[in-house]
Length: 184
Ligand code: FES
Ligand code: FES
Image (tube, rainbow, N blue to C red; front, side, top):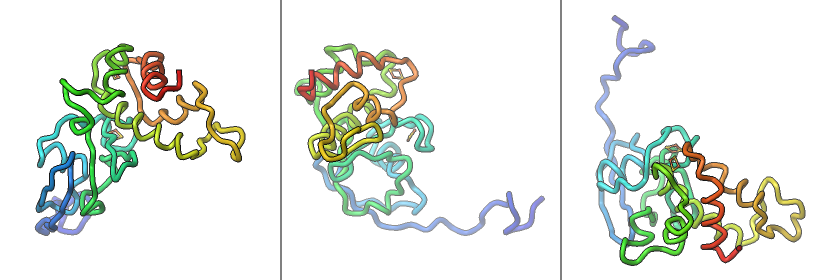
């Protein structure tokens, strides 16, 4: 059995707990969290907001995408203590069944999903991406950095490339984003 401190040995130290304040979908929360808790786990396990999905937990699939102070992030790669005091919007906060966000309505209209597992992340990411487009932020495929972003299909695909859809609903996701963003 490995001795304490050796590789593979259980860490006998008690977890370090820290206070974390978050404003999530307009509601204030004061949490006490193990400092290793990701924002995704804080949302799902502590606040019971399970709309944000855990696909890979490694920043590779985008299923956990939420908006942090209006910008899209992978919540699995973000420690909750890093964003103390921040404003978080999850898929639950974008709209409700009776009052859908235009991006949610467009995904429904264009059938932008099959199993739906990636969909909350796709929608949050698309909302954040449209703001980046509006702000003129260039992407990897933007040809003219002085006049960025006529929203070609290639631009949108590149900007959404961090959100994987294993059902490959990409054509319909693209159509939904063009529709909701007035880019059609
Ligand atoms: S769960 Fe966060 S990127 Fe996959
Ligand atoms: S709809 Fe199934 S993974 Fe995207």
